[in-house]
Length: 108
Length: 108
DNA sequence: TTAATAGTTTATATTTTTGTGAACTAATAA
DNA sequence: TTATTAGTTCACAAAAATATAAACTATTAA
Image (tube, rainbow over all chains, first blue to last red; front, side, top):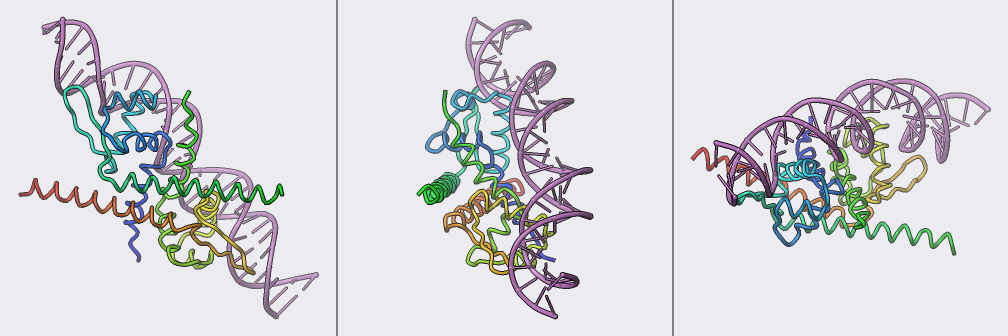
């Protein structure tokens, strides 16, 4: 029987991106490290909820965190996440373009 | 107020990858077009369930489909999905490596 | 026209994800 | 030592995702 463990592990990485708040977090952490409080201010998400999202992202390995005094800093664990994320955004843009082309066909 | 529509749309693309069966589908469609029946045989997923997964992937724009006689063919709607997907896999491998390095530290 | 094949749709049950508020913990400051 | 700040954890409700089975549709073949 075929082992599909890799697909589950792989999909767990994808799940870590599969939420609007988490996409925004990836976006804002793209080029810089930010504290919990800064991320909260930018996203406007309630702290308990934000903490859950961040902890999911850390445990799935796409973010790293470290504490300095009272502040917890978060950053992307590597550059590939940002790149993959930007590719997905391009896929989205391509899809929207296809859609609009299709609509224009009908309107013509 | 900030418009976060793009994050929702972007996360919808990511959601289309956020499932082990769908990752396997992306994987097998990487370099070729396949019929529903072929995908079913490879994945071993029940037809009604497979149809739901494929239809989600088509409506999110990551797959395209066309019918020929009794068969429905599926393919990736572009190369970027495959590339993004491979990047995610690399992220996974990096994460696993980090984990194992950490464990080795403790064992030493 | 009837049957067979290939796939879709629908209803439903189960599981997973998400958001909220309250209680909690850790580090610093008074 | 007590209060404050910064964040986490927990319990729970609501929403979304998933799997299954049965009924359905479309195309081709007999």
